[in-house]
Image 1 (cartoon, rainbow, N blue to C red):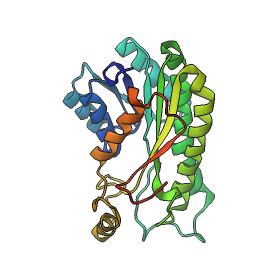
Image 2: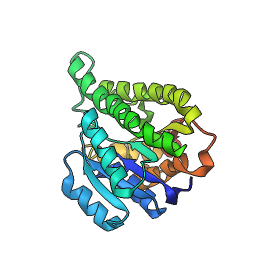
Image 3: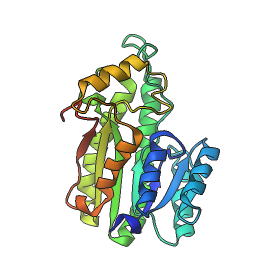
Length: 254
C-alpha cells in the first residue's frame, strides 16, 4: 500500500519526535491520527498545519486499553476506513540527564514498571486495537521506536533501556504471529536526538561528543529519524519484518 493511501496512527505525536514523524507521513499524503496524552494544544496546532481534512488529534493514554480502543474506533469513524499503520512512539515521562539518572544502588522497581507500562503495555494496547482493521484490509504496518542504548549503554539508564529491550522482543514475536495476516512489525532505534523535550536536559558538550563519534559528524535530528520511519511503512519494505534498524548517524553498529 502506498504511503499516500495509509491511515497512520502516531502515538505521542503532539511534540518532539512524534510530531516530526506525523509531519513526515503527512508530507507523503498519508492521513494521520495525532495521538496525545496531555499536549492537546500542540496536537491540535499540528493538525491545523497538516490540514484538518487529513489529520485528526485524539487524546488517549496508551497504557489504558479502553482509551486506546476508543481512539482507534474514532479514527476509523472519522476517516471512513481502519488504521493501517501504527507508530509506537509515546514515551513515559523521562529525561535524558545522565547526572540526575537513578544509579544502580538507588533505582527501584517502580521506575522500571513505569517505563515498561509506557513502552511495552502501551505498544501492546495499540497493536491489539489495530489488528482487526489491519486484518480487514489485508495490510498492516507496526513500527516501534526503540533506542541504541541496549546495544551500547554509554549512559546506563537502567529502566528506560530495559523497557526498550523488551519492546524489541515484542517486535520480533509479534512479527512472527502477525506475518500471515500481511502485517509487518519492525523497530527503529535512535540515539540521542537534537533536540526533543526528553533530551533538552542533555549538556551541549554531550551532543558535541556524540557528533564527533559518528561517521556523519552530526547528531541525528527528529526529522532525519522520521524519514527512516517511512521506509518501514513504505512498499519498499514489504519483505522486511522483525527487524531493528539503528538510525544514529553510524554511531552504533547493530
